[in-house]
Length: 50
Picture 1 (cartoon, helix red, strand yellow):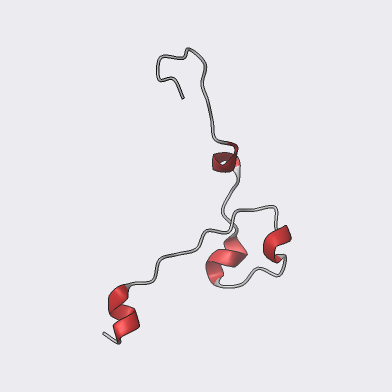
Picture 2 (cartoon, helix red, strand yellow; picture 1 turned 90 degrees about the vertical axis):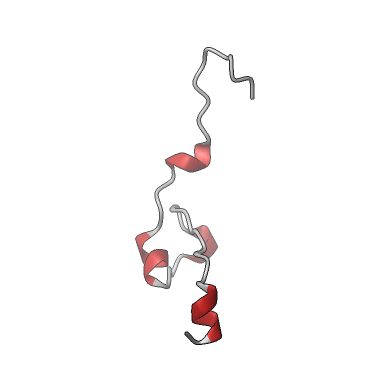
């Protein structure tokens, strides 16, 4: 993108809300859900058992 462009360029993905069901752990709509499913990064200490 040209930073000097006079027009506002928005990413269409940024308008999609996060899915509250996926954030809780499960969305029954899966890949067909109209909301965004964002995978969370697991804490490395949790994976090691701390």
